[in-house]
Length: 308
Image (cartoon, rainbow, N blue to C red):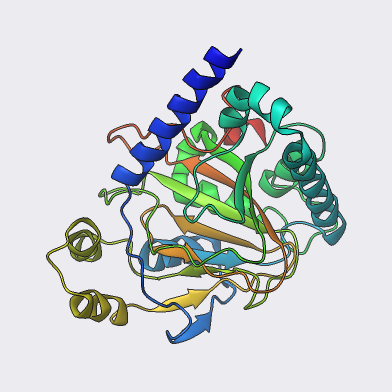
């Protein structure tokens, strides 16, 4: 009814306002004039990769999912988004409450969507393939499973999915402000796995990571600039100039795994649609304050233990 729609609209508005109030980001600075180098593949053993993640805040693995599987996921995500966005305004109003539950918050919303995924069909198959120790027809057998078992230890199977979604970025999407996904804590609370469903180049809104920013010292300095208007643009620029920048030019089937405390942003898309499948795992070794639910369907209740 019209009354229901008004209530839903007010709820959406409050959510957006809360997002703005809680925003911890630095905007208004160009990424493109930074010294951008590529995020390289992480080599060595699982323990080596874990050490890299702990110090750099991000790692990259190649050929985690087959080209055919990536293409099937890409096609299905595009189809689902097209259907959702092509509905008439009347239908969209009627389904507004459902839409709030199926789309997540994302910085610089224009031409960007965070669309939740279901753990079924080809999506379940993709997760099972990536997170199982035995991967057929892959050069990276058990790479992610070995990695997370090394990272989480004996508690690996207890790691719950905090998010399971997709990021769709179309031409015209602006560069996001630089931000972390969580505040600094002594133990990383979450880790996000970004899976490239297509080859990504410099003009497709690739993700920019700031390695080594998952530390208390960097967050203290960052918070000064993100939360206060006392600091001049020169001081903010000085802080940003001190950082390193790695662009995620992932190939189809590659993944980047990011510590949630690492500073990053999506860059401007000047070319064509870019689609990422992603999921975030809660760190079972983290015992601090519980973070609000992330980008996932309310009904999704799975952990690493579901994929063995």
